[in-house]
Image (cartoon, rainbow, N blue to C red; front, side, top):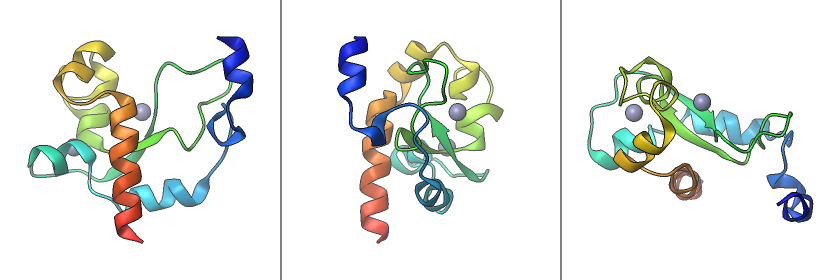
Length: 110
Ligand SMILES: [Zn+2]
Ligand SMILES: [Zn+2]
């Protein structure tokens, strides 16, 4: 695992910074609200994928657009940080899917 981690492109390694991406994500709708047709009531933030940390924060490229509600403010089962990850991912999307959807939205926004 360590070996494959070291072979990852530097953009995907922990600690990689991409302020421009984070700023653009703030202008996107929440991926969950948008895809599920839910009315978004809180602002969008960039969520960094949970689980890849080896000390440093995961790469800014491994971020997705979530509203405050689906990030931390929603009740258990709604907010990714307030729910066991596998439960949340089963209900909505895996974090890799969220990143993919966010990347598509960023492409369409250009
Ligand atoms: Zn949302
Ligand atoms: Zn987060």
